Length: 253
Ligand SMILES: Nc1ncnc2c1ncn2[C@@H]1O[C@H](COP(=O)(O)OP(=O)(O)OP(=O)(O)O)[C@@H](O)[C@H]1O
Ligand SMILES: [Mg+2]
Image (cartoon, protein in one colour):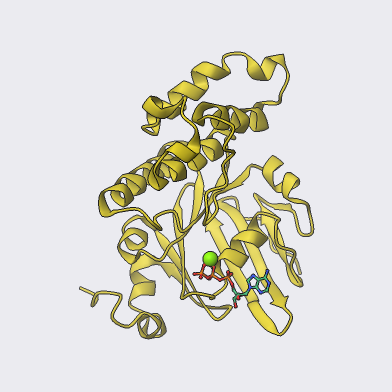
């Protein structure tokens, strides 16, 4: 039996299993990420969060399961095809090119969506500069990424992703190493991007304040198993989730 494709779902991962030798990093995990909203993916160290982002971006092969991006079956496809299907991601350690300045990173992202020919290049500097201004990076646009503090490097990676005009953005622990103010600023930018551009965001995050504040729904992984999924308020009052995060989550109001 096949399920009719649901139009409000950006990304479906169905019955995903990934094993590394004896370790079952993901055990028949199914999640559906809605369009235009932020979904949080939480769980303790080693729960399988990064592995799941790898599956969703084509970098990690699955032992079984199915991957649908806006209804298109990409199971077994190469990462380039995921990118063409307008999937973008950031990494736990920002993946930037030391030789390129900030604006050149954004131009690379733009060329991914527009093509590298003359038509793609027309007006690209203006578009890049507008995006850099929107993300608060205008003043550092001609600097190299390695000269920048980590918080700005993470934003450069996001800017490059946004320039590629994604339908889905995967963020792997974007607040790690940021202070409170930087985290707040980052949260505001991601919320705005989801709302204004209709981008589906899947956010892996250890900072519970951040993830609970901006996620409309949550997925909770524990040792490769999905133990809870649903609207944020419901998931945070779930007993198993509270036990897995004892002392981390506040009492429900
Ligand atoms: N390439 C790999 N080879 C072997 N084992 C791996 C590999 N990648 C991940 N694992 C194992 O799979 C499990 C899930 O790892 P994963 O990195 O997805 O967890 P995570 O939830 O992202 O953790 P963290 O919060 O520490 O980033 C862990 O037991 C990890 O050791
Ligand atoms: Mg991880």
